[in-house]
Length: 171
Ligand code: ADP
Image (cartoon, rainbow, N blue to C red; front, top):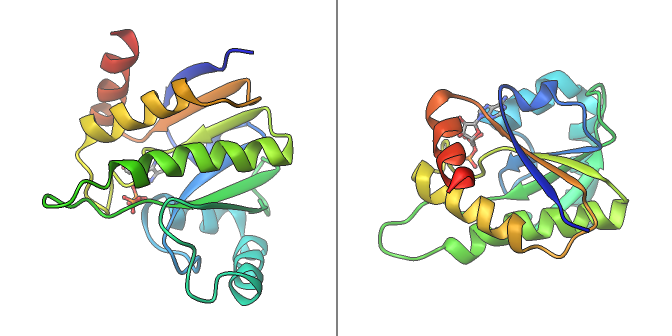
């Protein structure tokens, strides 16, 4: 079944979907940007689940490009899927790692049985990825994914991010 891709400008914590994806950092212990917003609004249950995952599986951190799910606490969704984007590098091509964030998140969503998933523009904030390129990788990867997720929504925080995704999706 074809996956429907849509764009929304706004805050990912306002989305009513089965799962939202967090642009986490490898520690899984929270940070700024989307990560901060998700933990603030979702409450302590998410951090508690992240701590347990660290203790059981990810003592060295969740590797870049991987994804793992937790409950969503007080957020109005069933799961948070945490993925760790690569830091932008001008000297090294890390595109495959960024693509992996999207494909691994969808793989985890399939395991959970999530039918609708909201993504932020992973790595395009503090991790410095240029927005146009981050948008291209996000859209190409989701369009190529073999997934049962029916509804993928990209939630873009500002005008620039929305415009970058919109331009590519129209093209
Ligand atoms: P990273 O460390 O992967 O770059 P950030 O959270 O710093 O992650 O930023 C990723 C993208 O998410 C940026 O484009 C940023 O503007 C955007 N963003 C920040 N807060 C939110 C939010 N609450 N909802 C959706 N997108 C957000």
